[in-house]
Image (cartoon, rainbow, N blue to C red; front, side, top):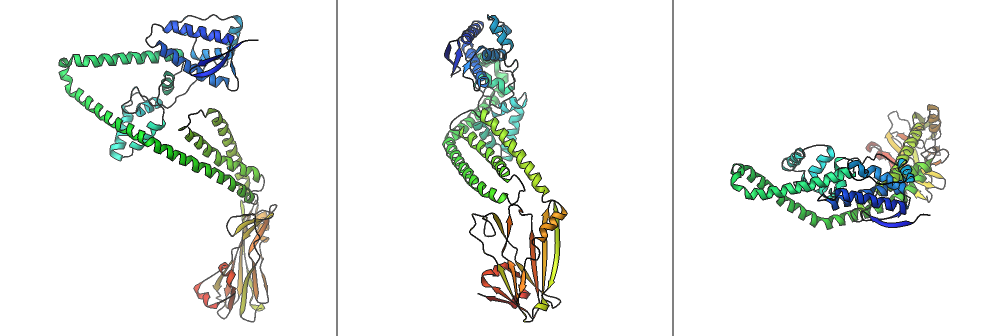
Length: 501
């Protein structure tokens, strides 16, 4: 049984076993002795603590206690004291064995985008972008931004947004990550010592600048230009800082409103997805439920990710863990939607179209013909407008209606144009014949279906009929007032139409 100890490392609490605690103390004691002569000793140690704390967060995951295994793994990444000239640590045989099997010997951080406040002219945006892109001199990016501002007038807003969104590289680990360099003890120490030396040089230059004014008259023009540019930069910096300070509450309100609208949109989308699945099962041959679920995830995950990202403005938090799983779920849903789309398209690949003509003249001697539409929409559970709804286990879809045209041959003639789709030409033709000749003509009355019904087994495969009634000059067409909207006609036919209630 081993004792466990509560510690605070880099501002975060951890539980560590006794062996690892003793070894960690030895590790930091060795570092303090090594860097004791450096002016930035305390800052170096603090930055090392911050970096080790980050690595422990990555390694522990679901574990609760830091053991020698986790500790030696982190030390392998950070560097052992003897690697940079400090005293070596004593380890017993068991600890050496654990170190040999530590989790990782190499740890790549990758570049991260930060604002470089050390080399800044304004907010450090250009210098940070230069470091991220591997450009040695940020002057070129500054020139591009200046051109975009003064020539095109579009550079101010992107610069301010980057200034607000991109974090500043404050710690040594941030500055190393900005350049893509390994975040270990040696590099952290070099970074801090370089900063101290640079600060010392700037102070020395500032002092000598005023002590040797008479010796620098030849450089007066260059100094004047530099001071003028510095003054302009400071004025612009003050203006931008003030704008950001004033805009922050407004940005908070806007972001809150955006988050609220996105949340309402998610709820509405989930409700509509239930309706969407009910209709989808008549169009997708198989797996309509999983297809609908995949579509929901495909849309929902990016929206939720945006909401979580925006909440960082109010409550800073890490999104690495759930971001990874959400990315995996989104990828799986994309594959599911893609495969479903391919499968569904195959059932609509082939098409069939046919036209039939029916001469109604021999059956009508009264020179009058009545048009009517049979059927009544039931109280459907789900509806997409007046022409598409689900009634029980059937999909009800409104028919296209009838067009009236003047006959050129003196005959009362009905033309039927039918089309449908299917996986094969034969299947498409079969689907078309199901809706062919679905009108009734008797006793001078021509009746059409108001809608067609499709079962889940049969589904909808693009079945469509278009009717055109060619009316002779001496014929009258009687239309019911309530169904008049189902009939289209040319102006030359309007004189032959009689409307009845």
